[in-house]
View (spheres, rainbow, N blue to C red):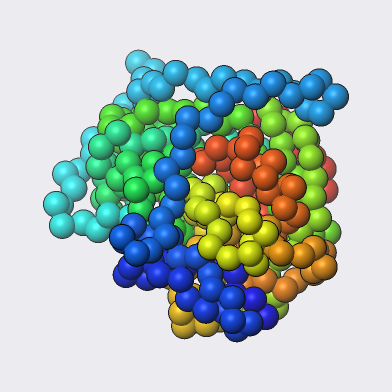
Length: 309
């Protein structure tokens, strides 16, 4: 039973799996493995028969200006001692994402340009800081809501949770892609601008360690350390295990990963510790086309294609 979820430790070291295969723990230590900082994605033109043409990213902008009739609740001062959200579990107390099963594409993301406070609601209580990077990798969080001049984003290192940001301290980034994972048919579909580009059969979490439902996002990428990953980079998602006590002790505090495997014999089965496995060719295509910040939605099964944003 492979342990294939990406997990941190103090030095983000590799730990062994039940089958004797080490897993990558995202790291910044001199002897550890680190998330690879994401270069600016190239503009890729795809033939019309394979999907819509790639769209260039929007110019970073400030938070939207509220209408004259809209009153912006002030942001309470954030105590300097609040925790900073990192690769470990996010602080508790943030609100649940009320639309976590919504498959409408999230087309904008937030990138902090400095350390900014994250609140429970517009004008609510500050609980943590969000930094421009996690483990040295730039962070982009999809925008889930806007209200009263404030912006709600999907919180990193948490499941189905929002954080509210007051105006200022971040730029917005266009997100052209979306990944939808269906647990019952074991299918991953990549969408661009609301149109399906490709689908792949995937392996998902075993009983008791099911791949978490709801909206999350691509947090970053890291190179594989062993041939077990098929020699292909790994996407770490913002999601974490729903039941941390169900995973081996060395994987507690872990994140869910999207990656390939050294063979495809388990595709269509529930054999992972919550990670999403697909073919090596599929993973390479996603790595080439999909940027960090892209939203990922895990549902049991789609009754209809996702609506266009």
